[in-house]
Amino acid sequence: MELMEPYDRRIWRWWVMSYIISKSHDAIQIKSQDDDSESPSIATVNKELLCFYSPYYTAAIKGSFSECHKKVFTLRLSALQTQMFVEWLYIGRYEYVSPQNDDIHMCALYILADQTDIIALRRTIMARMRFCYRPMTPGLMVRTVSQLPGGSGLRRYLLEEAVAEQM
Image (tube, rainbow, N blue to C red):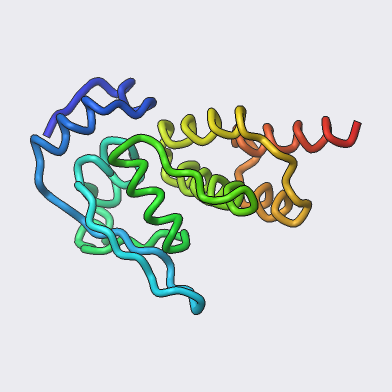
């Protein structure tokens, strides 16, 4: 199914989402990682929508990998973060959670976006961080920076903000 120009993948747009879900009804399930403190969240999402924003999922679902036969993909996210990701897929934003946990959720979603090459989600999170940035705790900073690749925009941004805070 040929959709739109590749540049459309870089920004979430409601008309792109509407077009995709009106043309394809194929679905796939995504699941949060199992955690002892909460039951996993399982969500059914439009397969084409997920593939449109992520070359990683396009390769995994439509490629010649063994994953192409999987019915459920497990994300390295909590149940709440998985719900936030699904919400972003369909409405292009996620709801504010709480001041003490918002940074944790934004970082987890950014890491997912970085690993699965979802440029539009990375941009959504960077825009939010730009306007809502509060210094992170050192522990969260270390955990986040250590999970991001060296060339990650969020990694550079967090390190520059940490240095600026120390001056």
